[in-house]
Length: 91
Image (cartoon, rainbow, N blue to C red):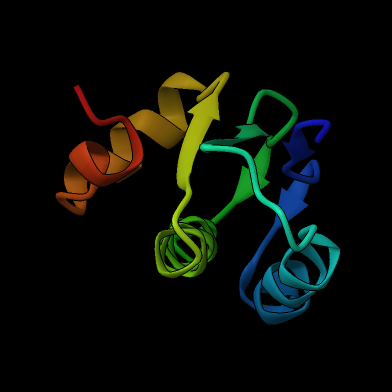
């Protein structure tokens, strides 16, 4: 499975559609870890975190884990501020 990619812009208005699109694209046989490339994300609000956590929840229910690669400093800072960094970047 090729990595999922965050769009350049992910604001509240796009959040539900973004998550629904990813969930619809998931293959029935998931790999142990699904990679999401966050490096292209440049304009976002806290809804981006909600999308990532929603995808993480869906993958966990299906027996897989989410691995977020390329988190920008700003996205990492927001995740830390909201206390969810450990959920998105487990040790």
